[in-house]
Image (cartoon, rainbow, N blue to C red; front, side, top):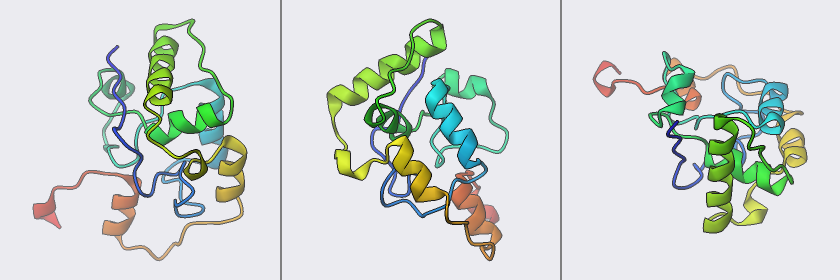
Amino acid sequence: MNLSICKKMCGECPFSQSSPKGWLGPHSLDDVLETLHEGKLFSCHMLRKVDMVQQDIENGDIRICRGFVASATKSGIVFDRQTETQRAISDLQILVSREAKEESESILSSDEFKKHHSPFRPRNDLSEKDLNQRLGYKINRDSI
């Protein structure tokens, strides 16, 4: 396993105070919170591909969301170290904590995340291009 993590939080990272309220891409609020509390792998929304698989994340081809890891830490979640995946995400959590690049106030804890995203719904009138961009899909610019 060769996990990699984003060097900084995206401007619209769903775990950031500045993220668009209610925008979770293809994920439900409950699924994201479950992933956070269970210490599963969560990729950056800007790097997601239509045909990606779990192995893309495990190989480091798709990076782990830095905001996800920072949010877990702010929420008091310490990832277990029982499995290879858990050890790898735990190591990333230690790295992000040591680097301390993010201001604590800019990160949403799991409770803040729930409040920030639950009462709102994303706009339904987005163009296909904007929708795909928000979903994080890489699109060949020549085809646009």
